[in-house]
Length: 168
Image 1 (cartoon, one colour):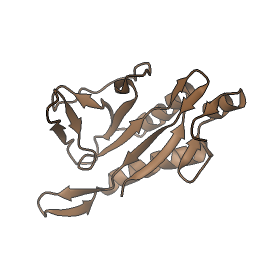
Image 2 (image 1 turned 135 degrees about the horizontal axis):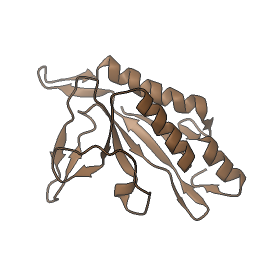
Image 3 (image 1 turned 45 degrees about the vertical axis):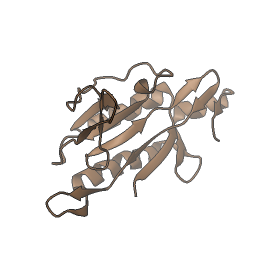
């Protein structure tokens, strides 16, 4: 079962979040898709737009000892990361249209298939600890709106100034 958090982040909230995740070390930010199985890391996120490629990313922990696993999408000219097999957090950004903020979120699988044993296994403790640190940071810094739903300080300010958090 993947671990999931839904959140509302303003641009400032997102910048602070990424700064925290980078401070943990061993971070690569990868695009959602790549023309080849060699995903080129990104150094910043593009301006969010309607195009999903500006809103979905992978946060890879390179210090875990598991390789990044990518697969070609049938009938498409691109590869995607296999989030189940890879030491990654899928990250999608909040997105504001007019006075409405759509939620973002993150999720990660804590298990993978060990190819030697041909059995389900827990991802390494370093990965689980890293995810728990990121998850804990959001839970500590953000306001809880639901069981797995949180709003960053900037998103709360957006709402206080008349903005709408979609789905809330």
